Amino acid sequence: MAPVLEVRGLVKEYPGVKALKGVDFAVERGEVHCLLGPNGAGKSTLIKCVSGAVAPTAGEILLDGDPLPVGDPSASLRRGVATIYQELDLVDELTVAQSVFLAHEPRRGPFLDLERMRRDAAALLARLGHEAIDPRTKVRELRPAAQQVVSIARALSHDVRLLIMDEPSAILDDGEIETLFGVVRRLTADGVSVVYISHRLDEIRRIGDRVTVLTDGRTAATDLPAATPTDELVELMVGRAVEQLYPERPHASGEVVLDVRGVRRLPSVRAVSLQVRAGEVVGLGGLVGSGRTELLRLIYGLDAPQAGEVRVGGRRLPPGRPDRAIAAGLGLAPEDRKSQGLLLDWSLTKNVSLADLGRFERGLLSVRAERAAAREQLQRLRTVPADAERAVRELSGGNQQKVVLARWLLRSCRVLLLDEPTRGVDVATKAELYRVIGDLAAAGVAVLVVSSELGELVGICSRILVMREGETVFEVDGERASERELLRHAVAPTETADLIEEVT
Ligand SMILES: Nc1ncnc2c1ncn2[C@@H]1O[C@H](COP(=O)(O)OP(=O)(O)OP(=O)(O)O)[C@@H](O)[C@H]1O
Image 1 (tube, helix red, strand yellow):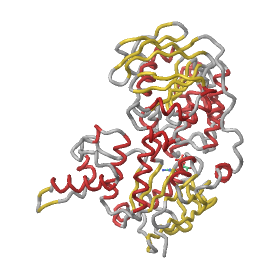
Image 2 (cartoon, protein in one colour):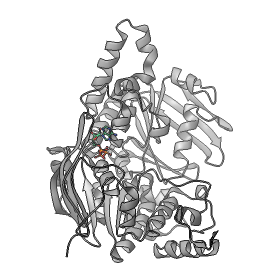
Image 3 (tube, protein in one colour):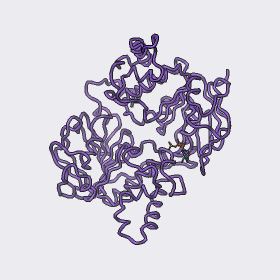
Image 4 (cartoon, helix red, strand yellow):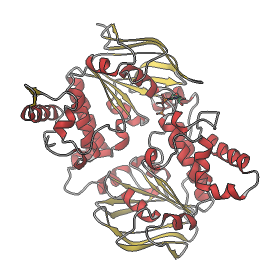
């Protein structure tokens, strides 16, 4: 039997960049085929070619043995290829039913058949095991994980044969990932094939059947079993072994630099007090929606607290004043980097030096100094393009994130707030980033890091706090922490213990 999808010799050139240099791979019916590769390897470009979002320069894409029209998204969708991107393209104000049938609403005569739309949406959600999602709810009222289920239901409304998921777990916490895997298993049991992109190797082992590794626009290996040892996959990806993922754990030595006292802003943050010492890396674990990002925003002054105060070096920061927070030595690398962090049409170097323009404006050889310093940081994080004057828009997602991080690492902060710093970042870069965080701590910076990857918190933190429903509910020394215990505190006591069983 022909594979569902077959890609042969696929090439994609952008002006000045060969994103794909000849990719081959095939996906069988009902399998979860994982695509792995370092940042900038060409994974997104490959799936954009298959979904019709971009037209390849050369090569063939066959679906069930027949060529797929290129650069024609509606033709790909008609043939049963649907894509779930990491940034879900749902409209907040529409209901679930409207979202599922957007642009192909069932009609009775000239009128929308609302009743059928709701019924069919409910049936699709039930097929995914999510009958609890009400088709009449507005999308904005749903948690990201439920929104993702709605996106998948929308794909199914098109009679999908091949579902492509681009880093679907990046916006989810550990519990929600289990939900996603449940949906994927149901789909494959129905004969749907799934192409699954992720940088999280543990996930690939749990959900994948086979793996294709891309590096530098080419297939480095294909049809590997998902059980291939991590070391082997990493070596295929980065061309060398990453010997030590986590550096030596930093130990706090200095005085308290960041002092958060009874900070509240309802409904997300109820009452949080915490301290971070110079040289310490403190982790903030918890489920998506537990208030971690909102807490960082309060500390940084993006929002003003209703009660409580934030002190840096003993001095109280005026609430709601990020300019004063920056002046006091705070830096924040936000979670949603696309909208909060980057000027997409500016060059890499300009984006990196953005946080510290004052420093360069004062100097004489400003442009040269700016470029040299920015380039050094970018190289440290293995940001691929050699040409640091390229516009950030042209970078892969992971490389864009590194630009934001490089910006904050360049600036001499006293307190660095990092929100999901390794999301979408490949494993070799993760190791590098952990080392940079460790070096900063060793130099006396106080680091507060939010991450949904509990394993990474256990790996790099001096101390870990767990937040649940707007409060810190648990604290543990990094050396004694375990993922299982952190997760147990992160989920509400009423939630099932089964979840923890499954996840750990
Ligand atoms: N619109 C574009 N214009 C120019 N170059 C581009 C464009 N889109 C992607 N590229 C380049 O193509 C290459 C592959 O990028 P792609 O986004 O496919 O990588 P990826 O494997 O998905 O990376 P990541 O893991 O970071 O998401 C990169 O060098 C990137 O800079």
